[in-house]
Image 1 (tube, rainbow, N blue to C red):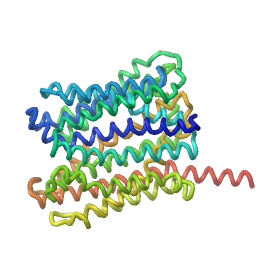
Image 2: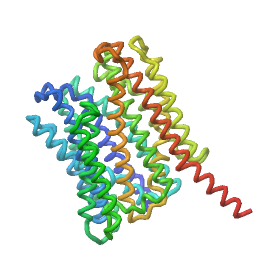
Image 3: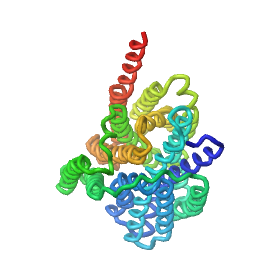
Image 4: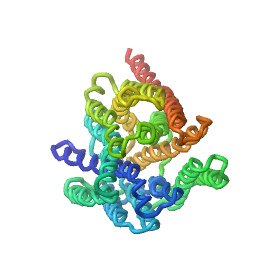
Length: 470
């Protein structure tokens, strides 16, 4: 465990690498119109700029996490970071649709190795308690701040420079992090054994099928035969995966991780939270640009009421945890986000940015800043060192799967929310408002799961301890 000043450097490397992933995802969103014009993407092809990345990322997460357990987490951290950085450069110099999509898929592979390695290294370098709480507060801040920073940078590059600049900046950052990781991060013990190839294959195919089915359903509707076939394949592969994991000696996902009620609740609550919050990020951008008529750069800046409070509240998490406890922060954060989404749901085509958008964004930023750290901590609580990679992979799977599922559901909500054509401004505003209400409902369900599976069992455990001591 890192207890010296070196711990600050290790934390900075881990958080910066995770921040690079989150910023990159957001940069793509604001750069899509310029990418389409530059390379001649059709409307259908354009969605695959994001989907190619999502499929590779979601499909290989568990395999990437297990590779860290067997081969060493620092080694896989550097490998994932190197692949992500090289793919970023390849995207920046892309000359065709195919070139860019292949590079995006490779970048997703790098992220699938890198993302679980960041959280696993954090768990192994910082002991449970105040040290890990502080580290997770920075990690959570990177998730919230990175999303908005990416939107601002993407809009700035798209408006003033080139969409390619958003990918080129990953080269110097990636090289610096690779050198720093080689010097300052200690390698974790390697666990002898072989890869669970059957589990790796079925988990990868299953996750890819789930993500593809959800993405396609969000594009063409839930009645689509290809989407339903993919979802059916995803379910079948998931069942086969579970059967394999029950039988192999060294599974890619030790099923013992799923026997803990608190962690299971954390995974489900995270899925529901991301399912709701993806609606905020995806549709707020459309509201700002298509209803309030802001330029991409202005729209990115318009998210600052989320970013700044998010960062401030995340940095206050260690103090707030000591004062109120992590469970109180989790519920308070969800409540703030729910109120903010319901408030956003009142906006219409005549809305004022400051009253109907900025103020509810302030609540959402504060809420997300305080809840992500305790929610992440619950997902890796009580995990043995040899399983931290797999547990971190599960946290990222819940994150990825929740966002994909949520977007698929909310796009359907968007399409059915108003009878008028979506391109009409009043109709568009009404549809987006309905999405915000649906997102708030998903967060309310996340709060219910957190109460039943995380908070209530913990309270009962404390009461039993007091009774035994009495």
